[in-house]
Image (tube, rainbow, N blue to C red; front, side, top):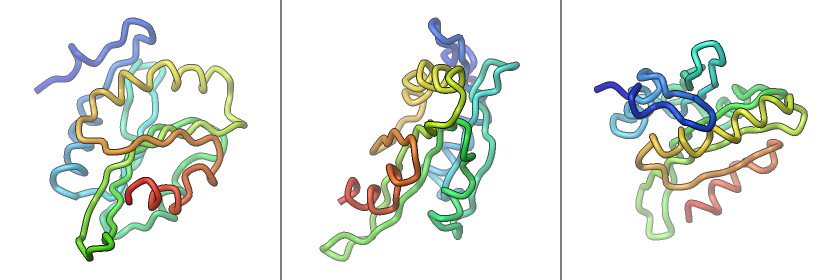
Length: 145
């Protein structure tokens, strides 16, 4: 199944690499990854996988993997226990756009976000973060409950 045909966006021209979709589905359906970090490959004009984190990796491992001065998209599979003691999982889409990143990068990621986000079916929540406090684990906990 190729995503190339659907993967281009008239306004930004950004496609979605097939590996990006496959890796996301591994996180969503098979729980192979705790998180996936995506970046825009400007030469290929598509969103590609930069890094994945295994199921045992923590939220701190995830946040430490995001660059301090460049934009990224990320998906995080957040496991928690409800007040009724049920084990649940929610998938967060995080648009990471640090205040110190280049304006061109911020614009590129902003204009491509909706197109990419739409490809990822099954996302529960979206967070836009410009600094680490905006995507603190408490933020995820509050949104998920």
